[in-house]
Image 1 (cartoon, one colour):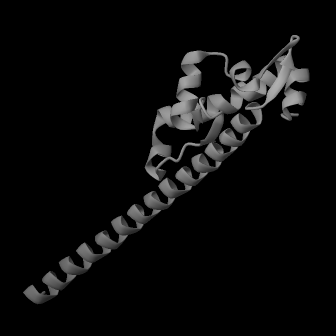
Image 2 (tube, one colour; image 1 turned 180 degrees about the vertical axis):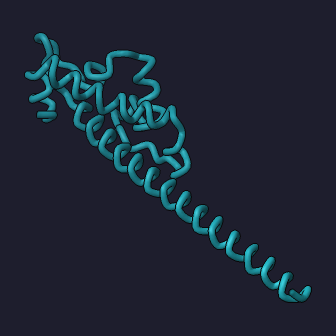
Length: 137
């Protein structure tokens, strides 16, 4: 075999390896984008649930806001306010916290989103009357 034939074979082999790894990289990027879309959707659901809790209700004879009842752990509530909502207590406003797509890949963000959804579900099971008054059921 001539030198040019061997060189052509080596170049072809290198090109095939490059195509293989490019496909793998594209597949990883697609999987990453799909995971971010999934968590963005869950974030929107968590925000919707938090918004539903941010209403006045009568609980045990006291007129109060449902938000601190559902999220009664102050430490966790600060995480909800860091990753799910922005609360302006002075103007009594709540709005969604805008996250960059890359933040949805952070384990702490995913954990807060999941725990927010779980906290609302737990409240619905433990306090069905108050959950109905908030429109959670």
